[in-house]
Image 1 (cartoon, helix red, strand yellow):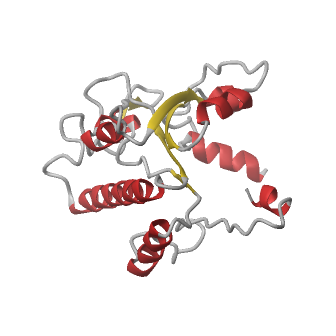
Image 2 (cartoon, helix red, strand yellow):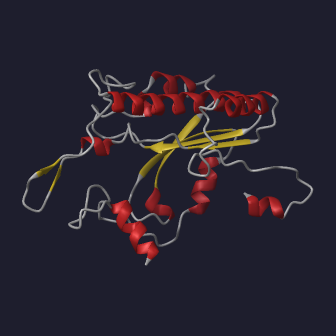
Image 3 (cartoon, one colour):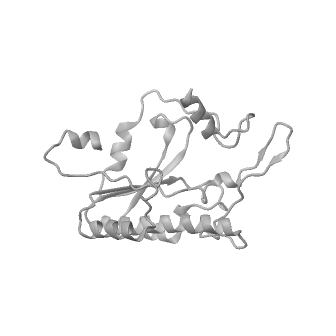
Length: 222
């Protein structure tokens, strides 16, 4: 977007990347920052909103059983949600409750901001697609997300894609919630010709004990 805006000097638009990965102060749970975001949204100054609420407490990977080469079960982070307890299971530890609180807070704040923005701006939200296993949790199974998509008055629509079609190393089924845009048309035009559907899985750990994400990061450093 910065590159596009540089080619349009007469357009006065600023891109804001609100993420603690950019700077610790860029936390939407900060009262002053949240008030600023809601204010510009209510004033119609937020032209576009792109968000990806954290999936660490929602991911189906928490339900995946991993074993070492000897067949010994590897203990990983346990499930914190289920399809019939989407906002958090009971009997969680204090640390797990903190994770659930953060995940719930960021999702709900993001949806509130999207609802305000939808009156005049384009909105997009990315999250893993609904798991095939019906007992697994997903934000797309919450009543809130279903309500916001309900025809004819629901302001949002959604589309599910597989990221390998755009150059990803794995299939990565992903669902995108959107408003005020021609997102399906844009996605269709961005598909890579000749892309081959990958077969390998990126879940779990390699024999080195590293996760797939850590392995990719090490390769990039080399």
